[in-house]
Image (cartoon, rainbow, N blue to C red; front, top):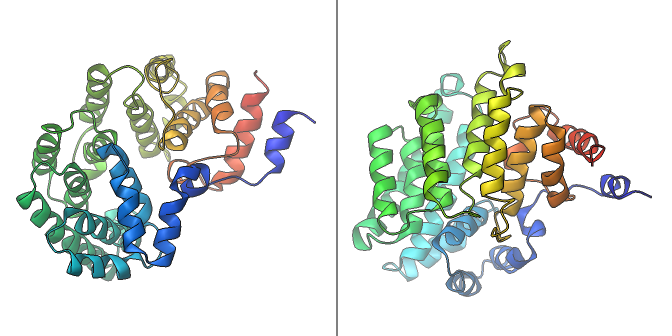
Length: 318
């Protein structure tokens, strides 16, 4: 039986904790409400980018606020428990808001979301005031800036404070990129320009190139209900831009596979697939195997079926 048939017969791996086995101890600690084990896991993470990634994953584990709130009370001057709790509040705020447009939210939805985000922001303000170099807190404050509609200049100020200590923080860049899109008061010119600026400044083999895929997917989604949507990602100039970004990041010889790998390859696989560039998509589907980032692909209706269909079509080009 061919490789594609075998992979297609297995269920998709959509949980990052399952796609990256090294993350499993964090999920176990969260399920157990074990702060000591949670803290020990984070203390072993060398990169602020990976701290932010793990913090966002932990935030999605149900009812973690219970043991994180206890940890904050017990260690009130420690930035880690406050930042992790803030990330959980941000997650709850997003859940309360839902995925609809701002104008479609009920008053109750909007207010409940803002309440969670305000709680997160209060914690993060304290952390950043006490420890201005604590990058994970500044990263989370980019999310609260967007959710609380604090505007472009405030988001940029927070990003600039962060880059004083970590100039190529991929998750922070992804947060600001979303802020720069028209939905949040920015423009496509600003969003695309920022993505290119990050790629140009970053070391080759970094994740920065993924920002190019992200902004093109967002631009496509903005046009999804118009006649322009079909042709947008099919444009040769867009395809070539995506190719250059992939070569500079996840396809670069110096790229190191890390915790971000499913999100990164998922973004390129989606962008190339939507544009009909299946030969380009094939390398990213091959890297993914049966893993996929739901946060990237759920922009499509019935996204699991679409992922499988695109993967099958792409594998036929190899």
